[in-house]
Length: 279
Ligand code: SF4
Image (cartoon, rainbow, N blue to C red; front, side, top):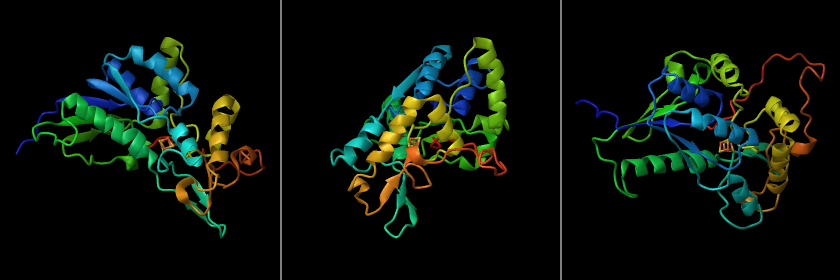
């Protein structure tokens, strides 16, 4: 039996380095173009990500749908105040009463990224809520994962959708994306390198990223500090432990974010954070 021909080719636009590279390679004719891109907005990205989107979207030869399940930061704050949903949760670190470390189950990626993109694709296909996508319909979702992150590739859970990873297929690493962008984006248009895209309070950040946020985007860092303080409200997440955004389980404004080298230790790794949810 032959597979149905894809009806729709969607770029899942995270607005970071990798998906921006794909979008611009599509614009350059180096990758077959998408019919449209979809950006799932948590309303919690650093301001620089939104500035980057303002520059990027007019350069693309296809439309971009900006979809959203709401303001993730506002939902978290509402939950800490005992209002609203209490399950819109990033994988915050939890200090248990015995001092051990736990981590919350990640709910945010599914609710604020995957589900809203899936909902928009179904709308584009004209499939009503609760109805099955017809067997002869196939969608390709193009995803920005680079060769160095190939372990994050997944098979789509929807039978009507296939995932495509053009950077992995072309053996392009994140570093090569940055080199390509330096020439085709920064030099050509005079724009800065696309920033990392991730919610300002995303606990997946490593120190290098927290430090960059603190030093280069103090307002975004303050938003993360505010969320970090708020999630220690009794009752947040119906937990007995205390939540933190930083894996040291220290309040974010008190964390020592100095580099290993600054502490007199050898810097063995370039502790770069992938900063994305894997959508
Ligand atoms: S960037 Fe982090 S906090 Fe934001 S949706 Fe993804 S995993 Fe959750």
